[in-house]
Image (cartoon, rainbow, N blue to C red; front, side, top):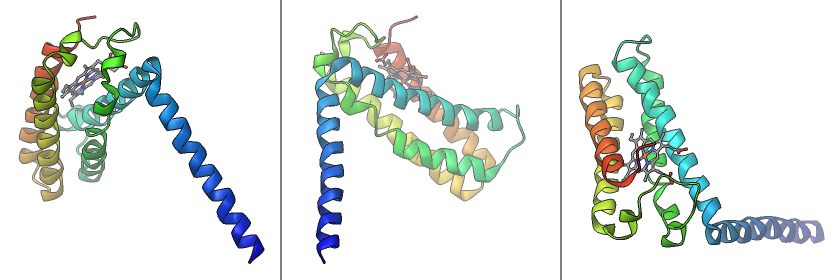
Length: 154
Ligand code: HEC
């Protein structure tokens, strides 16, 4: 019994620590930029993996396509809370200040990206390669629309 209580206290302590750390990172603009860029990098990785297959550069593997699409459903929700107005003056970013002015368009662009990613995941589950190819193209357009408006050219 005593052990159980101690165990619970230790677990609470650990999770509490994680929560405090996450909160601290949220307050640090440079860290927020790194986190949203990390999410985008992984979006690029798993989206690119599907691209290589629908474009025939590597053999089509339906299981990998489906796994990547499912990862993208989660990843496509992650970058946005990192676009905090406090990061507008960060130096480690290519995000344009327009993000914090035209917040409605930025949000709409993010929403259409998530919508198309969800369709890509459905297409992947259907096993229809042509549907996957079409959905891949539709997602790609949403990346481009947002980058054109809200990311500086390198
Ligand atoms: C709603 C807007 C939006 C959408 C949609 C979007 N991106 Fe981005 N992306 C950005 C912004 C803004 C940045 C710049 C982030 C920064 O430098 O702080 C970025 C950065 C990136 C980066 C560079 C990350 C780094 O380390 O600098 C990659 C790679 C990327 N995006 C890939 C993609 C891909 C692939 C898609 C679509 C499958 C996509 N993005 C969709 C807004 C978007």
